[in-house]
Image (cartoon, rainbow, N blue to C red):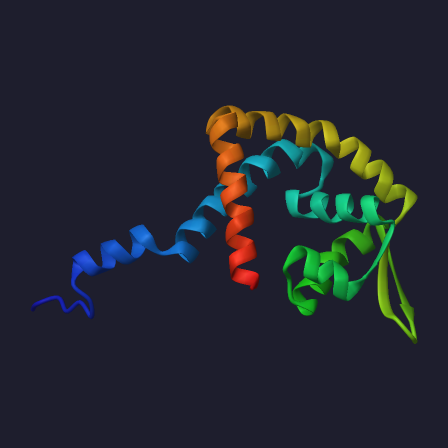
Amino acid sequence: MTEHHPLPPDTCDEVLRVCGSFNLRKASRSVTQLYDDYLQPTGLRSTQVVVLVILARERQLSMGRLARELMLSPSTLSRNLRPLERDSLIDITSNAKRGKSVRLTDQGEQALLDAVPHWQRAQAKFTELVGAEQWQELSTRLSETLTALRS
């Protein structure tokens, strides 16, 4: 019995090697795991820390604006916010005129303060592994990529 491949193996290899979506997701999952490992003692994930940081900067945001900041759909944002709300780290309120908004609670501020030293160690390890200059260059290119994709 002969194996049938819908694509030649060299085409499969090329797709896996050059696909922007696949390779960025692989890199993203690897980086996320590094940060999550360092943040593990806090009970927060790296994605949750970013939400808390955005709310610490802005004090209060509409759900729509927070979704845009995080580049998430409203339903994905709602799912991601549930554990933070359950743990009283954020407060979600409804306003008839403005819809729902999100704010950081005092407990959320404390959780963020506790998480920052862990995040700093993760960032230092990431920079050590990737190289400070390489990370600066990659960060710039990622920003340019986002700008190009948003236009």
